[in-house]
Amino acid sequence: MSSDEITPKPLRRPRARGAVAATTDGHDVEETWRQTCRALVVPLERALTLPALRAAQARLAEAAARQGLAIVEEPLFALKGDPGEDPPHRWAYEAVLPIRGAARPEGDVTVARVEGGMHLAAIAPRGLDDLASLYGHLLGSLLPGRKQRLVRPYILHRAHRTADGQGRPPAEPAAVTVYVPAVLSMEPVPMPAGDAEA
Image 1: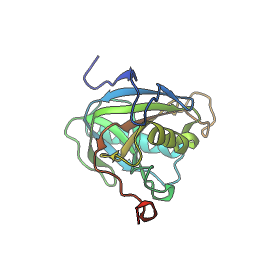
Image 2: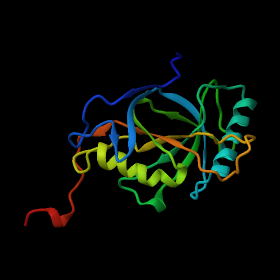
Image 3: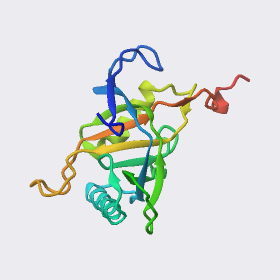
Image 4: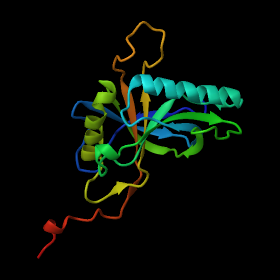
């Protein structure tokens, strides 16, 4: 196994809010260690669709080929923000292609550092339409709400079966693996004013 591959491990102990098992609300959750890497990234439209995601990933692959870069992992996409705190209309996604080599920006394609470390991974079986529900399960059930918050609000995803040429309609839902960084701040989240003692 190369250093660029990820290593999933089933959860073996309760996390965050007490006795949470490896399955929560029908979602199997695993601990996954990801390597830090450099990547080509490009913004995605706010209305995220599989055809738009495929097109963005193809653009990144073409840029990598032009620059002679090595692609070290399957394409990803990322949510820039914390869906536990930010409303959906503020969510911003970008396509992410992990690479190795002397990358340079091209237009709206930029070069970024994608932090590694421990992540919680779960699959949204109904694809993009299931993401908001899965965010709620991961952040609401496995991560503490009022005591801690995400240090790195950058959630990675991998859509499965998005390649063309396999006889499926372009809009067919694809399963999506979601990787939430398990790096938390001990700084408490401020309580609403109504919850404070008089």
